[in-house]
Amino acid sequence: MILETERLYLREMGQDDFEALCKILQDEDTMYAYEGAFNDMEAQEWLDRQISRYRKWGFGLWAVILKETDEMIGQCGLTMQPWKEEEVLEVGYLFQRRYWHNGYAIEAAQACKRYAFETLGAEEVCSIIRDTNTASQKVAVRNGMVITDSWTKHYRGVDMPHDRYVVRPEN
Image 1 (tube, helix red, strand yellow):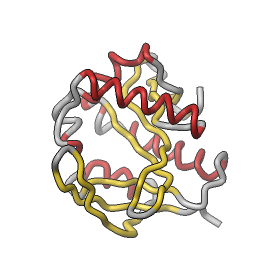
Image 2 (image 1 turned 30 degrees about the vertical axis):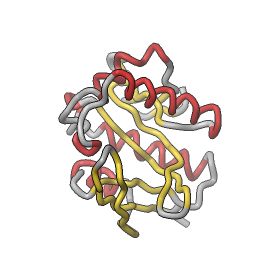
Image 3 (image 1 turned 135 degrees about the vertical axis):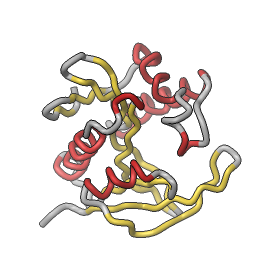
Image 4 (image 1 turned 180 degrees about the vertical axis):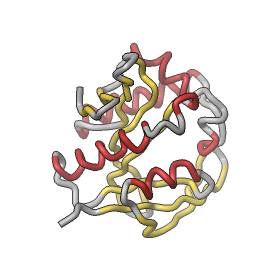
């Protein structure tokens, strides 16, 4: 276990989590900000990328486990992401649609923000969010973040405007 909150715990994902991960990545509605659901190969690449991040950085997107059922309901964690000419530390989150609107994303995202500041000693952490993804924008704002700049990413053949929400540790 990496992190624990009142209702959740976060841990590294492994190959055994592939099926649960697919419940997220292969849902069209959940993946609208990514221009649609992933196929099996894309989902495996996603999982492999997280495992590689754990080795390289000691963090990545972690499995979010609901304590009550011991079920993986989402993923949330920290990743290094390209932003313009630099790499930035990002809090990212994706949850199974049936668990939306229960406060799990903000609960996990706040824990990851604290981890970034308290454990990693980060000077700032951000969330990079597509301009049409209002649900994720609301989580970022509740996590104390404000928009600092914008950039258009090209992904899956589409130009996607994104905003970078940033928070710094409180003094």
